[in-house]
Image (cartoon, rainbow, N blue to C red):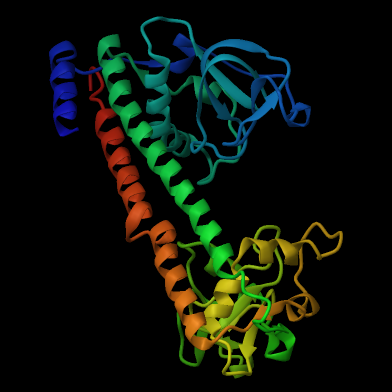
Length: 386
């Protein structure tokens, strides 16, 4: 790949010795919105419907038949880009960029926008965060007018990266399905293995509510980390700290908590971190030595348990897990030796499919970082006259 990058540099030096000419997007392309709404989508639609999301819907009618780049007009500004070549429909607040000259490779400009559009929008916006954009702002974005042969070669290099990434993603998804298959099998016990309701061997206690004004970004004497839902479901959340509320609300590393509320989080369980838990979570503390807490964690982590808990939350749009639901779960009680065996197997398998430091996730992460590095190198040009 380094040789490819050097080759591109040589070609640019040969064909553009004084720098690359840039033109406003509006001078070389049509920029406009569609007329469709997201609620017009159908399950088995014939044509793609691009909305203000990275997810593509489908519809039975099309508005355009062309090669174009699609970006949202609201939400995901600078993060969502689609390349399309063919018939498609477009949301009223999503923009199409269709080039009017054969001097531009649309796929090349798709990559260039992906690399540079967000910084352009942020630089020219009044606020640090951009919630929406309009046509004139898009039209002012400058695109490089490289010789077509160089554009095509850069596209070829970056396409290879995306193909390799897609192959790794498919392999990882297959491994995850395999993991779920074996996990389900490991928890299928003979009828002679006794099962008990969780409430008979465990106690549950809810966390504490703390006003945002009393949550601090730094640790102080007498304070402890405040564990919120975002701390468990996001990897880059800045920790918050509160005045120690007492042992009743504190979990140690390795103790089990379950999230009570949230459309996608309710029912999820975690062992990591030490701190005071928020009131939208609760602790599960065992009062028996016949059940290993890690075994219970693995059992409750099953998708079928998650789905079962979320299917009984009533008609509320915000699912909520009750003590009655979790307490009524029947937990299998194999020998401690068998519990440890299952935990060890699942731990190794989980690392292969989820641990960012080993296996396929590590390879995929490295490939993405490599792709971003070369995309930046390949799409950075000296502008003519500067």
